[in-house]
Length: 203
Image (cartoon, rainbow, N blue to C red; front, side, top):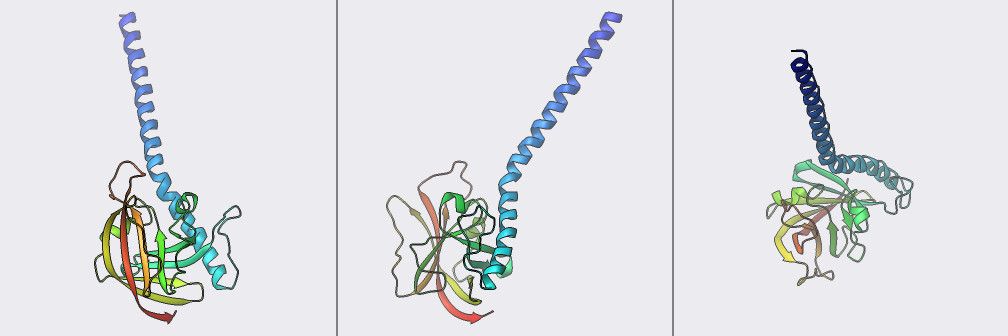
């Protein structure tokens, strides 16, 4: 009897250890899943403060001491539901923190095609819900709000297509990877939202 009782005690103890390990693994998995959105949210908060300094006349204010990028515009869409800071440059390091303006393209709000890229699973996930005719706004550091109307929603193969940067129109191209629900990153397809400028006004 004592032997059987001891065995049952060890089995119960082992069961508690297994349950604890499974719980820890579950919390770790949840933490991993929340890491990227939390990082993106925190970065936007820091960039909003840098944006405020840019509006006060500080040139190229970095959002954190080791940053090699700075805010160049503020992107608004879906009636204010989308409100985020756009950084200078399109490197992978920059896009980890927010959408990035490709420096080879036109400056936001100016003539030509201004190209902004972002990750499909964080900042630019909202692109899949945009429709033709929707309004996108870009606020520049000088306090001018440039409003655009969506005129194109396209899926392109980056191996065979390139964006036209020189344009007589004032355009805005928002680019992200496609499809939005892809499990693997680095595919060749891109989702491109093209918008044409309608108006500009001081904020």
